[in-house]
Length: 211
Figure (cartoon, rainbow, N blue to C red):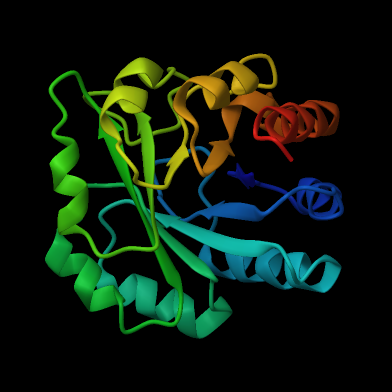
C-alpha cells in the first residue's frame, strides 16, 4: 500500500515523518491559498531534508492551476519526484509537463455526476480521487464517496484521498481497494502532524491493504 503524508509545514514534522517505516511519499504544498503553503525556498529545504533522511521517500510537489513556468522553476530548484495537479488542469497542460522527469498525479474531486471516463483523457502516472467541494481544491476534511468510487473506478489504479483518518482508513481501503492513500488533515492538530496518529494511520492502512 502506497502511503502519502501531505501538507507538512515545519522541519520538525518533516524529520519525524521521514524516519517512519511505511511512508512512501511526503507532499509539499505549493498552492498559495492553502494554510499548508510552502515557498519555493522552504519546499527546497524540506526536499533536501527528506532525501537526506530517507532517499526512498518520494517528494511530491502539489499545485493547483499553477503557471507551467512555476512548476518548471520548482523542478530546477528542488526536482520533485512527483508533481501532483489538484486543480482544473487540462490534458494539454499535463502534456506540457511530461517534458519533466517527475511522475504526474492528476487529482479529481468526485462530485455526484462525475464522469469517470474523463480519467482516460489524462496520460499520468496515477489518478487521485478526492472529496468534492464547490469552492475548495482538497484539504476540506470531507470524506470522498467511497461506494461511488468503488463502483465506477474499474481497473484503474487510484490513490484515495478526502477525509481519511486513522479511524476510517481501513474501512476506506476495504471498500475502495485503492492502490494508495493520501492523508493531510486527518493526522493533524492545530496545523501540526501528530506522529502517533501518523503511525496509526500507516499501520491501519498496511493491515487493510494486505501488507
